[in-house]
Length: 234
Image (cartoon, rainbow, N blue to C red; front, side, top):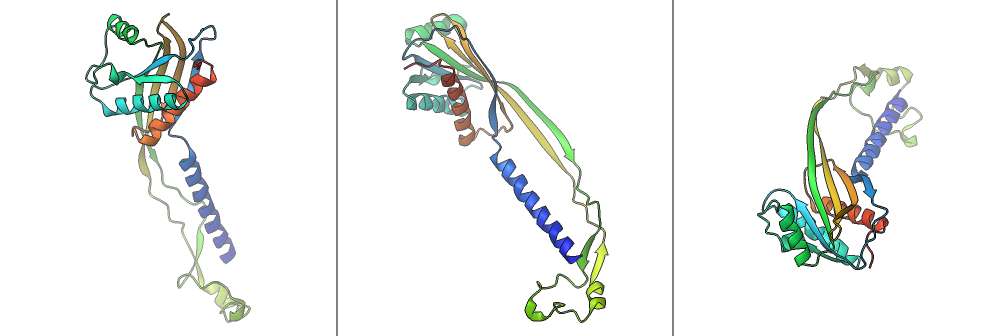
């Protein structure tokens, strides 16, 4: 019985470690779908303006724009954040004014990003209940068996061995309420001269915290997919 109980503890510990690794390695944001205009004839060495739509004077907007711009520049492309040309306090421009800004500054491509959906759902996770009772030492846990203590590891006979354990009801764990968050981000790449949509991507995030790591991952998956579809030519 002692061996069985020890094995259960080891399996429980192993399961906890595996679950922790899975949770730790899962990405808080990922690209769930994308579309590319295969007939698009993109300009070589384009100037790309990156725009994030959202709250006025939002530091997150500027952080995302700057991050994507930095990633594009690192890849050898020309890029500017929209906040350099449009005041952060402006939520949006009318189409004519926006086109004028783009053409006046010789922008060839416009990459927009916007949160289009935020959902939060609370759910209750019931406490776990073990299906069988467990066996524990009556006077607390004994020391590990040592061959120097004799064959019975300190027990005088098998009567004492079995009498030193008791069977108790497996204690349940308390339930908890968690909130599942799902945020959908839409990204669009336009060719200014046409103007035509040449790439579309939708990303899904499972956290509302715009951490540096989250922004880095977002910019990476967006830029990587655009480049993979040969829409950026040096």
